[in-house]
Amino acid sequence: MKLPNLEKAKIRNEKEVEYIDATIKKDVSLFRGKKYFLKTYGCQMNVHDSELIKNLLEGIGFLESDKMEGSDIVVLNTCAIRENAHDKVFGFLGRAKHEKSINPNLIICICGCMAQEPSVCEEILSCHKLPNLLMNKINKTDIEVESIEGNVVENLEYIRDSKISAWVNIMYGCDKFCTYCIVPYTRGKQRSRKSEKILEEVEKLKRENYKEITLLGQNVNAYGKDLEGELSFAELLEKVSDIGIERVRFVTSHPWDFTDELIDVIASKPNVMPYIHLPLQSGSSRILKLMGRRYTKEEYIKLYDKIKKKIPAASISTDIIVGFPGESEEDFRETLEVVDYCKYDSAFTFIFSPRVGTPAERLKDGTTLKEKEERLKRLNELVNKYSLLANQKYEGKIEDVLIIGPSEKGADLVCGYTETMKLVNVLGATSRVGEIVKVKITEAKSFSLNGEAIL
Ligand code: 5AD
Ligand code: SF4
Image 1 (cartoon, helix red, strand yellow):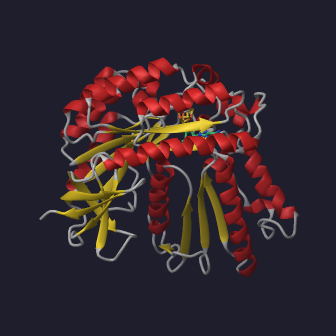
Image 2 (spheres, protein in one colour; image 1 turned 90 degrees about the vertical axis):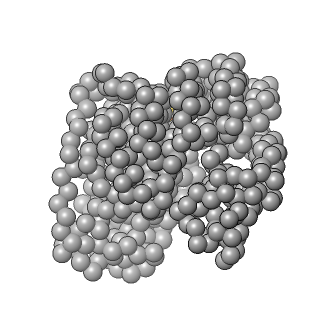
């Protein structure tokens, strides 16, 4: 049995990326009548990968079950980005272990980023020795780890969760190596899909009547840089936009590769949505340097200003890490200053979580967890204030909302998103799922809006 190797994953092998066609033989008689339970953790990439896993399993006869109990296979699509993601998966594995003690034939399959981490695999493997711990019924031969540095597989089929909104991978992996981040190791080197394949997929989605697509990559702005003669991300986005799907989105952007050309495409194409996720990570240039982010606070603000000037309607969200090793109170205050300046529509905030094998894991860290928690609290208060302010600007306005389905807030409500990615609970549109509806916004909350459909 071979474990994945983080050290090796660091070295980008020179081997050319192979572009191969999916060769998946479908035979539903193989596992007819068997059930699978799939649990997904983490980012949109994982959510989309799970749509692929569903297709693979259903292609060989499995049917999806919404509970682990009574299933024949449990698939955990895992995330490794922060320790709490690990904890959640291990918590869930505890339940799976219990289920296996009832049904010894149960197959437990762990895939995704955690399965690429050697320390995690060792932890899972060693568990079989401890009777009352995880997966004690499994012996070593039951566990296989496959770690592939990366080809690009084309013509994949998915069972998409939605008939309205679809994910489209445009690239895999990441070469940025931000010093805190595990992704370049677990997801491997950057591999762009060929643009003609992406465009083919988008055209198919258009024929299938999808209303929205989201182009996916860890760092979409670097699209094509690993392929000679390939389109830039701005050029790709323009071509995708011309296919004519009502709404085109993309995640995630790295400020480093965000070109003027890209801003112009977003500004000029009405179906490219004015919503940009632009991770800041820290407002201190000193910390940004330690993070390996390749921009300063000033450069980030300059980019922000440029985007806001050319796309005034743009809503901008961000990711921020507090408590990176060596972050002083002064560094943290600079982060608050940038938040005050950018007044983000929304922000995802995290406490730094050391990831095994990353450079930041080895940095000295004098800040206590208590201080970090306190910084996170102060940061959250500020970002929540700006989220509410941003939402309040919508009150009384009429917005185009793509209705995606029932709302959790009431049986007579549906929910959907504005062009700027604001979640709206809508009254009077229960029969209009899948349509873009004009909605008058009646009330703003911190994380959602309420509105009424205008007929
Ligand atoms: N600790 C805390 N947050 C992290 N992120 C990535 N790695 C870490 C880490 N080790 C955050 C970043 C990234 C988001 C997806 O997760 O803010 O943008
Ligand atoms: Fe991680 Fe994003 Fe940096 Fe890539 S660009 S290393 S995915 S934080």
